[in-house]
Picture 1 (tube, one colour):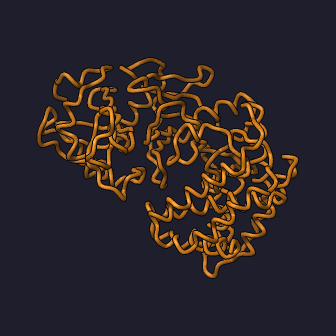
Picture 2 (tube, rainbow, N blue to C red; picture 1 turned 120 degrees about the vertical axis):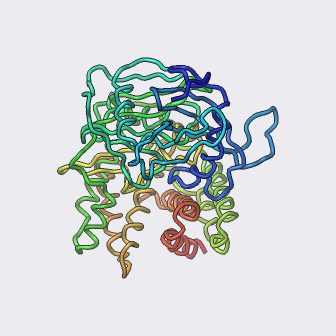
Length: 453
C-alpha cells in the first residue's frame, strides 16, 4: 500500500482519501442490500473516521447525505452513517469477483484497487485476529469476554442472507455481526444479549467479543457470538411445513413460550414502567401511517380505515407494563436447534433512532411482529392458507400466555393497533427494498382497513 499521511496503522485519517474513494462509493453503496437510501440519490459523502486496521485494510465511517443543502450550524445534511471495511491493493487477486468496488483514478490512492474487505478471506481472517486480542487501534476499541477464548485460524465465510448488516461465520463456531448503519450509543444487539446472558437466559447466544469506536462519537460497531451451526431459522421451517402440508402449531406454541421467557428475563434485567399514555402512542402510529402513505401511494386509499385502529386505543386495556423488548421480532429472527428455540438479532428496526430502540415498549409490539410473520409465511404459497396462519397465531399466543401470566388475545385493541402499525412499517420497507414483496403486506392492509371501516 502507498505510504500516505492518512494510512498509518492505528491512526485516524483526514478526508484526503475521499478524493480517491468518493466516486467509487457513490456507485457501490446504493447497490448494497444494507444501504438505506436506495430511493434517494447520494449527493455527498463525508468521511467521519478512518483507521488502518492492518496493512491493506481501511476502516471507515462515512456519512452518506441525500441533500445538497447544508444543515444549520455546519452539521452534515440528512442521511446515514455507514461502517465500511475496504481493502486496498496495488495488485489485487483475480478472484475478488463481487468484492471488487473499483480502481481509484485520482487522489492519494490513485492506481489502487479498492474492494469490500469482508468478502476477501485473507482480510476476514485478519479481522478475526484483531477481535481475538483486546486492545486499541486509533479510535477503535476491541473488547471481549475473557472466559470464552476464540481460537485462531478459523476459516471465514460471508453469509449471503438478505439483512441490514453483514455477518461473517468463522469455522462454524462463531459469527461476527458487523453493523452497517452506525448511530451514537450502545447497540441493543450487544446490550440486550449481554444482559440476558447475565440473567441466565439460554434462549440467546451470549456475546464473546465486540468492538466499538470513540470517534466521532461512542458507538458499537460489531459483536461476535457463538454460531448455532445445526440450527434452522423459523422462516425456513415455516415455509417447509407449508410446502409439505405439515402442521406448525406445536412449534408455534413452543416459540410463544420462548418469547415469554425472553420478555420475563428482560423485565428482570432492566427497569419497567406502567404502559405509556395511549393517546401519545396513537398519535405516533398515525404519524408513521401518514408518512408511509406519502411515500407509497397504494397505501393512501386505506388511510381512513387504518386510522380507526389507532383511534380506538384511547378506550382499550392499557396492557402489560412497558419494558425492553426485541423490537423487530419475526420468524427470521428465531432459530431452532434440536428442540429448542433461540432468539437472535436484538438490534430492533434499524430505520428507527437508536434512542427509541433502546427505550421501553409494550411487549405486545414483539407479539404483533411474530403474528404478522405467520401471515407472511402463509402468503408465500398459492392458494393462500389463512387457516394455517390462524392456527399458528392461536398456538403462539397460547404458548406465550402459559408462561407470561397474561394472554395477548385478550388485549384486542392493543394487539390490533400494533399489528396495523407493523403492517404499515412492512409496506414502507418492501416498497423501498423489495418491491416484488409489496403485495404481501398490502393484503394485510386491505383486511385491516376494512375491519377499521
